[in-house]
Length: 355
Ligand SMILES: *Cc1c(COP(=O)(O)O)cnc(C)c1O
Image (cartoon, rainbow, N blue to C red):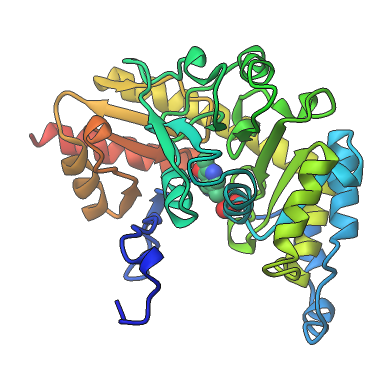
């Protein structure tokens, strides 16, 4: 730390992203990327001719991408916000819709690690609400609040989802608070709350192209809400970096939306593979949550979470282990292809067999 860092940030603990090692070729099951490449339409859209136009700024209004998303979700362009990854949108949302002790924020204690980082970054008071014993979210904990509510649905790293009726209950019981639903994993079996945004002006749904749409490296996220909420987010974006989405990513995103069927087919394959792997892990004595995401959250009585993580890494397989006390026995395993899952299961059998 230099002596120039603002005192506001001296104690800030930054988010720790999943490792992206370059020392060898791993089977990467640690950051919930898609095992499938972007669709052919995306590869075609991002061509040499477009690269040659990188001397020009991108469209700050993101008109075409917004129109494509609006049509896919049955909304108007005014209901759509896009930025460089949903992390960007979450950051803007904490900036825009939370304020110190005046408008604090509430989110589950075991959830996306970035929520507390954004709260700290923007000096927002927050309550991290414990999950139930079985890692589910207790809906009542989020009803009739005096705080902005942030919930990942399905939740991460548990994969457990709330029903649409449960989300609606949270939204209707907090008419004067913003409810942000982070739907990074919704395409893998959750129920999207985007269908409710015309009905409720306090609901903001945030989503990403990083997981189900195979564009993690392109950095693209979107949000759907009432047009006033979207206008607030635009205000923050235009006060920080109006060109936050580069030209190539805008084109890739637009092509991906047009090719929605390809991605939804991939989601089906991933769901099948999730069920296959979960069943095999349970047969090996693992406990797994009922995940509706593209990852499995699993623990074994026979081996500690960190020990399994390290043994798998030694065998060239990366999974995500968290050090938080309540979940330290677990690993979060991204669902990949059949070959990747079979390699994982074989490695686990070998590790458990040797103990
Ligand atoms: C991966 C993830 C994000 C971030 O996605 P980007 O669009 O890549 O920034 C947001 N929320 C949750 C819960 C995630 O798991």
